[in-house]
Image (cartoon, rainbow, N blue to C red; front, top):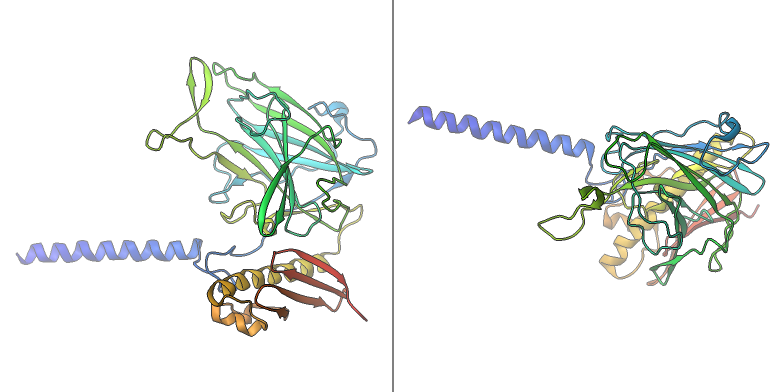
Length: 375
């Protein structure tokens, strides 16, 4: 009897130890709160960056590295899983990007052992294929954005996402209205399950100034927030044809797997503040200034997160930064001291960069902008 009790105690102790160890590991890798003490919010902002180089002559959009025109452009870092931030699919996706006059040029290489696509309609409402995706914060306000999808057949789909009264509205882009050009090439065979493919290439060009539904122009800034994704569906072969796999338990499609250029800490792609930064400059950017800008915007974004929690709890916004302590906001993590003006329905939080003489603002919609400070 004593031996049995001892054995049970040992088993119980081992279980507790494993549970505690897993909890500690989970806490280390997936904190319950972010650096400002806010629950279930993006933990921190560590964007990938990419500096565009200028072309002396614009590339030919043919899906190939014609005349070695892309040789002087550097590759981006490889895409990582949206789940854990690791490049663990055994394949590789990356891109090159540059600009000429008022146009951005992109050359993406997508490694894949089974390349398939069935949708050739460039004006399709929804992609049923695997696709490469470009996200652009058109006016760099971390609020509205454009996205362009392309599949291995070169079919395009685009949406402009804007917000009206806190509702997200997607409007489909008609590519005949804006000069977006695209081409693909296949290194292997498409829609042939009987061999092993190597990769496919997507080459695109699109203007720096894209106007859609009276949105602001996408102009050359010090940097533009962008992200890139590769979406792939799980599939089965039915009579030699690729079909997206259906979950037999739910009767619905499995979620597509996605790999991102700039990891977003498992947050949805709508969190524009976590996208990467693409520099549209001929000269090297002022790193000190970019670091300040990035930190100011990140602190304002977390004030926005905290204000949403405050409004949910008290049915009004805090009119002082100290009032956000009630929802767990850690003021000691602030490098800058935001100023807040608020009433029950609206607020504006501001930070002034005295070195650059800029005042940055964020409002209750989540829109970030700036203006020159008064001297």
